Image 1 (cartoon, one colour):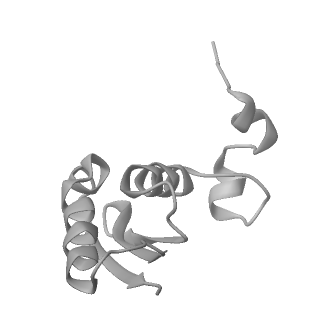
Image 2: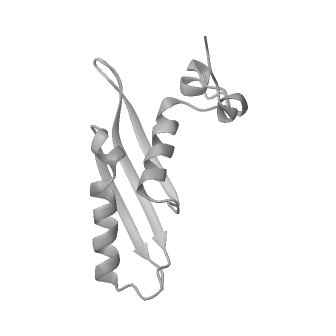
Image 3: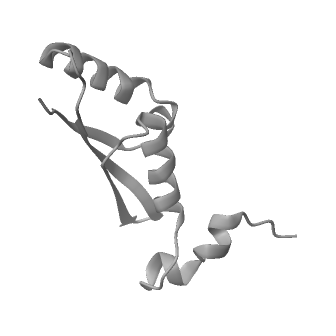
Length: 107
């Protein structure tokens, strides 16, 4: 028995959307969305690197790009909090991949 939510109905999920460029979503995009949601609701860009290895495919890297306007925050405090969010995110801990972050405080 298959159970699909609204997103799965609107964005087909399968081999063709993963490897053949067909419209839809794939596990890597779903992990990226979960990671972005975990890291911050205002994350502006998430890049997930999927590579073919000798034993199959693997997510080998995730790059987070955050641009935030935080009234009253110093650069040092912003950097500290962004690093804590990256390190403390349960999804970041789950992934066996290098997770990098570019965080920019907009004044």
